Amino acid sequence: MPKEYEALVAALKLTDYPCAEYGWKTRPEGSYFVAGLDFEAGSLAGDGVKTDRSWSGSLDAFFHLLEERDNVIETAEEILEEVFGSSWTMNSMQYETETGLFHAEWTFECMDEPEEEDPGEGS
Image 1: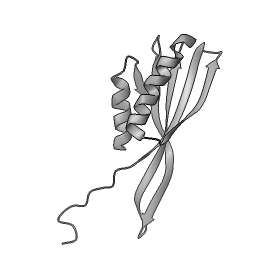
Image 2: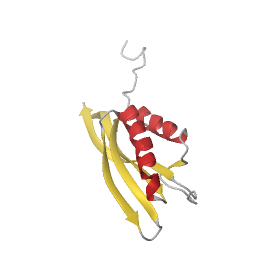
Image 3: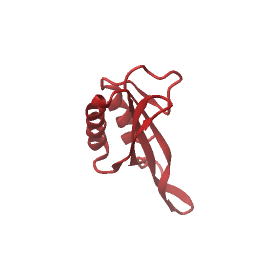
């Protein structure tokens, strides 16, 4: 799991909003976040072995009242900037009539940490 993604989830869990990865069995009553890694965005290979890759992920915020929008968006974007720098974008803002919730979605990219070589390897 990319360390940046783990940092995102950890930071979201420190906010006033509940956060789950990929979804909820039963969603919370108030505002909440959902984070997840969606797919491999790119990779490098050398000598027939994948040596590095990046991930595309998403952060979704759900809230009931339009008055909550600024605080929810500010919270999410402060964390995204802190963790990913500029490697994120707001993808959509919508109202879901089926659930009665506002839904904001951001996408981001993060890198896998390169695997550390065993010091005894290749000696």
